[in-house]
Length: 217
Image (cartoon, rainbow, N blue to C red; front, side, top):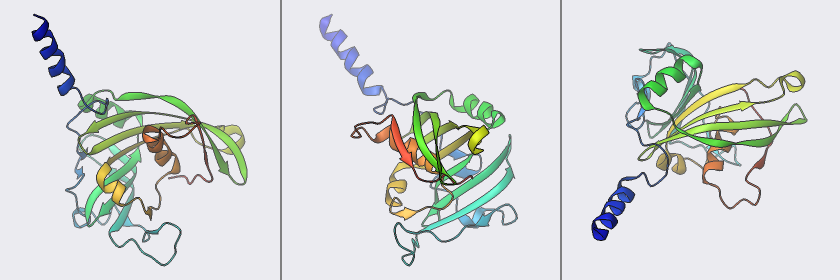
């Protein structure tokens, strides 16, 4: 009996997700599929290609593998997607970021279930040479190499005009790592910051970080 119990516990351990995050079949958002969608498949009336990305810290070394396209709004099968940014590596989609309003949230959760909620974090941000604090929260999902972040941040709108915002990011972790040397335009620093918080356990004070500038999507 004891041997059977040990075998059962080992089986449970092996089938549990190694990351601790909910496992899903999520591979993208609607017609935009990580590792499959190409720039040629985009509707040119909906998307505009963004400026060339450069290696961080330089203005002359282009990241020729990277292309990015942005749409203010695009109608999907279920809901309207707004402020959608698509990032391609060697002409294959590796990251997408968009607004995460209630309509999209309801459709997304109906298909993928709830993610793992992360504790709130406070970050210091600079806007127009002033500093204020934002509260950063979110949820996480994972499907093999694909990681999904739903990020919510809220600031002091009365003083600094920082909107309360929800954003969704779906990305290949492997390709994102390959592209990490590039300065990816229009990727909000707070989304990158939330991603770092999930993986950075070496910081002595993980509950507080500093971001120099916020650019609205």
